[in-house]
Length: 545
Image (cartoon, rainbow, N blue to C red; front, top):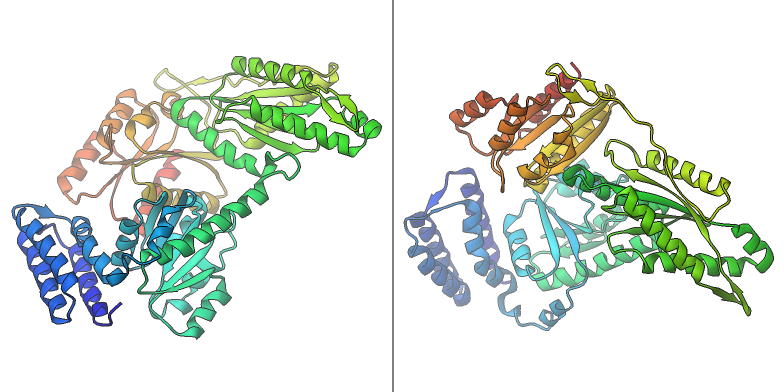
């Protein structure tokens, strides 16, 4: 990049930050800005940038009456950013490498350079990556476990290197798995780069850089991470998942149950008389039988189902969106398929059977261990009754009790909170989830957090239908059904919920309207962390009263 372009980018960044804090800007103000950028580009001999600014200026002048937000103005800047960052390199040999896009990935962008991140997001929009932008290191550290990204790109400025937040991010021991971190900086000093590597960075990229170069270097790390995840989560012998993968499966299926009321069935399978196979024919024969069973289960289950080697000769088959009647039919079919297949070892043909115990997972409040224990008891019954059997787990029933309005409500677990976050902004949900879990840990309480990206999904969920006592956090504006409509349904049904309304509006009449409709609390975006924490703490306390 031409050294004269750096201050030009600085000027654009400064202007954008001013727009962020002001009200919507008019077309005349935007036109003056792009006109000034064009003249400055001409003065430094960058006719290509000046020509691009002129094209944008003509487009803006055709919309003089329009009001622009800061984000809309930033989107208009994108062609200018490409000229600034790429210059004459837009047709360099790097470009063809973008044709190999690599795997899907979630990439976290953290830092205070919105122009650079806007350029990266725009230039790589054809790549199957989902970008999530967080402005602060604190938010990145707090959300790492919740978002579980495939890579984190951290843009640091002068002085960030020594801050505890930056050091903590690189040394974060609470990461759910290996997450590569790429540091982006304008600092070219070798000592700074070595310090970043020493702290735990996987790569250091000096700005200005092109999107093509950043893409290649990040893609390499994403592919490395995903290969490592496979090595950690895949059983080496059978090629199916190992038991470490089960919590991820349960999180996904519990979400389906909460949002759509779709139960799943967990089946625990055990090979019959497997010890005799090992003793009589050797462990290689036993390994061949295990691989045959794994292959059979994979071949004859659906893509949405999950096969896991639980340990030894035990496997878990988790059938998504499946009732207990359907699960029994599927397991019987799998039994017949496997019994009909033979394994040949040293000229000897073997056929085996398996027993299974299964349970219908129909309560999102229960833990993974709860369902595994029930399935294990059913499996024990199948083995005790001779093997080659399928047994369903017996689940004790919990009686409901009458609420004060005469309706039936489930008994409330005083040790457990339920919190529903209904917001189409994934980042807002992540921030609030982290705060809820923090407050629960402080009180040594267990908490179930349920997330919904629109109001209709919440109203269709068992959490709403069951009338379970919960804190419900509603965004004011959402697709399909907004927060006020959801609030109306809650209060009309007289459910025992505590409701917090979120909004980007600062209008006092809007706040008063929500309170009048029955909201217990009201918080405006962007959140003031201490205010959000205090109001949420109060609602959780009232949940126990």
